[in-house]
Length: 392
Ligand SMILES: *[C@@H]1O[C@H](CO)[C@@H](O)[C@H](O)[C@H]1NC(C)=O
Ligand SMILES: *[C@@H]1O[C@H](CO)[C@@H](O)[C@H](O)[C@H]1NC(C)=O
Image (cartoon, rainbow, N blue to C red):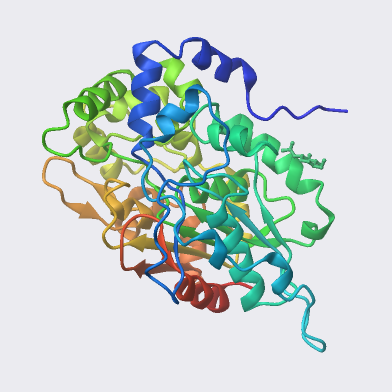
């Protein structure tokens, strides 16, 4: 029997051993800024937003120091959290049993955080009897949270796909909700595994087209700027691409050829390598691609899987400054020099259908939604509304 390790211990221990190296410190520090913990807003009481960064249950140690950079973890005092027992566990008699839902949390969050628990409660309230599974790379919340920063996405996806395959309730297929980077990873599951299959996938603030820059530092925050510089200087090295999770979806259009050469995850997921026709600078490379009449090379698995899905709902936060550009949540391309954005439907990845997403779009299965507010700031009522509209 295969023993599933929480996350790739070789690569993570390499990073942990090297934890005092500039790269690791810079990477962990810099990627803290990409925090994708759910910032769940109960509609009822805004005044209970008191314990920012408060009661995380993920141990102490070295890692804790980095966590202090985190802002906007779950909000709403625990006393107000509805207990799971209060939530209907059975389907309403006469109604069909709702389709199960799989949730994948964001960076800085864990599968059993208050925010993620609350998402589960909200989904079961909306549809009594819903089976909800929160993806974890480890049953220890500390390790699970840490695995959002450290490790290799490909390995984690493989383990998660195995777990999902062993959960009896999910065998008939399921709907999925991904928060921040968790949404990109669920798209990875959809394109590369999908057994059992995802029917509807909702992603909240997920950088489908990667992160083009780290979040901007406040003006005089020298430490933050220095950390970002160090991270960006080393991001396209083999060590970062095998140990630092957010490095594996860092896609700097001004360094496109480096990205294509080194990317440990996103370039494959978006099938960019097979379609790259060379060119030194990004802009040239992109222009070349636009002009290219070369037959697109598709991974048939990914296209077939996308074609099977019912919907991909991409939710963007209109005041998101964590994911840069925020429109990556809608799969848009940014020109970092001019700031100009190209919508997905005008990009070669869509037009030439590199990953099968055009088939979904042609059937009306590609949906763009916007929520007001910052990254991962989700109102309970919005989650209920979107889940009733698009899931089940
Ligand atoms: C968590 O624990 C359950 C029950 O022991 C086990 O089946 C599952 O494989 C574990 N998950 C991970 C990721 O280790
Ligand atoms: C296509 O993707 C699947 C799933 O990730 C993978 O197993 C397969 O090797 C890929 N095929 C090619 C030709 O790259």
